[in-house]
Length: 306
DNA sequence: ACTCTGACTCCAGACGCG
DNA sequence: TGAGTCAGAGT
DNA sequence: CGCGTCC
Image 1 (spheres, rainbow, N blue to C red):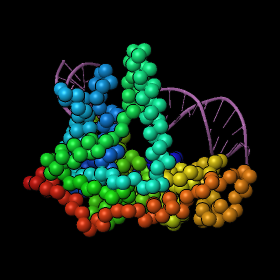
Image 2 (cartoon, rainbow, N blue to C red):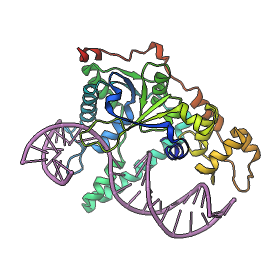
Image 3 (cartoon, helix red, strand yellow):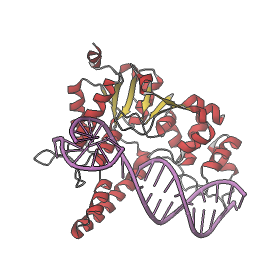
Image 4 (spheres, protein in one colour):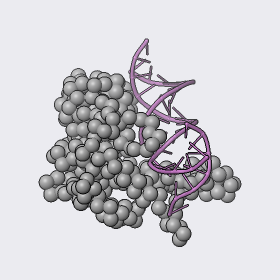
C-alpha cells in the first residue's frame, strides 16, 4: 500500500516540505485517521510473550480494541481530536493488489502450519503476523468502542485515505494522520506521520505539506499524481526500469504520462499491457468520497474539554 | 557512473514497575 | 508492509 | 531504561 519510495523522493528533493513538531503544537486540533490501517497495525503489534494476540476467555481477539482505546485516550489527553475513517468498498482497480495480498496471506498460512508442526516458535510468531487480515467484525467492534468513547467516525464510501484527505482539504480537520503516503496523492494539504503518543516514542511527529512538495518539485497536482503512478501505486502497474530518479526526470521533461508514453523507447522501457494509468489518475484526482460538509467530526468529544 | 531490481534483513503498541 | 542494505544487471 | 503485562 502506498507510493513506492515517495518518502525518499520528498526527503531528497523537497526537504522543506517536511517539518518536525512537538505534540504541544497540535493542541486543540482535529485529525482524520484511517481506522482500518490502525487496526491492522494493532493486530500485528499487540501480542504477548508467546506471540499470540490478546483475547477474551472465549478466544476472541482484543488486541485492536486495546490499541485503539489507549492511543485514542492518549490523543485526547494531548488535546487532539481524532476522527476515525473506515474503509468502504475498494475500487475495482485495486483488485489486482488485493489478490496479491490474499496470495501472500495464503503462503504465510501454509508456512505457519509447517512451523506449528515443527514447533518453531520464532517462525510461528513471524508467519502468524503475516496472516493478519482486518475483518468487518474488527471494524464493527472498533466503531462500537468509539461510539462509547464519544469519538466521531466516518464510514467512507470507498478508500479511507481519500476520505481523510477530503476532510483535510475542506478544513473539517487540520490534517490526515497516516503512515501511508498515498493520502498525499489524494490531495491532503497536510499529512502527519508518526502521530503516536507512547512514552517511549522514538520519532518526532513529521508534518508534510503538499503545497511545499509541489513547489519543491515544481509540479502541478496532476503531474504529482502522474509521478506517483510512475513510482508505483496500488491501482496499476508501473514501468519496469523506471525508478524514482527517472520518474521525476520524465515528468519534469514531458509533463504528463501521455507524453512520456509517446516518447519513451518501448524497447528499453516497455509500457505495461492494458495500462490503466488514466483510470488510476482519475481515482486519485476525483475519488469517491462523502461530502465533508455532511460529516460531523466533533461527536461529543467536546465534553472532554470541560 | 548512475540507476533500477530483487533478495535479504528487521520491524511493527502502550503501560508501568523496578 | 515498509524501510534499509546489498549484489548484480542494465542504461 | 529494560522488561513483563495488558486479555
